[in-house]
Length: 154
View 1 (spheres, helix red, strand yellow):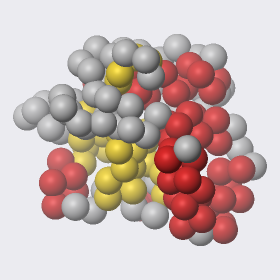
View 2 (cartoon, helix red, strand yellow):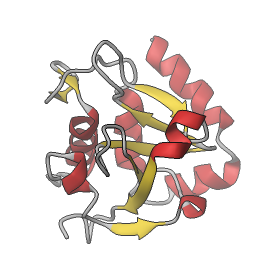
View 3 (cartoon, helix red, strand yellow):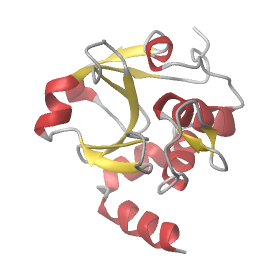
């Protein structure tokens, strides 16, 4: 119930134009699955709500659930699929990549709109939403990719 209430509040905060874009595209599925995972515990190598998620496991899970498309396992591998997107052009459902271990593309999350993204951050934490503009995430931003059903396997 807590997740449903949070999801309703979150969707109410997204501008109408963003809601229309998300609702009218296939991107709605992965984003909805990601939001449903809010609060799931972090587990290194985790790929399911039951076992927990790491960052790339969360992303792989939501695309497999929404589109039936298996994605590569690691954030680095995921950073090589789809189409590059500039930070200023992000739309809900785009993947955002960060350098969190002195290694490019070592962390991945999903942009949800309004300067925020959802991700599985680290051991001891849970899937959560954060701002892409906090100093920590802004300085570690490595790029973004847009996945489409037609090109997600490329």
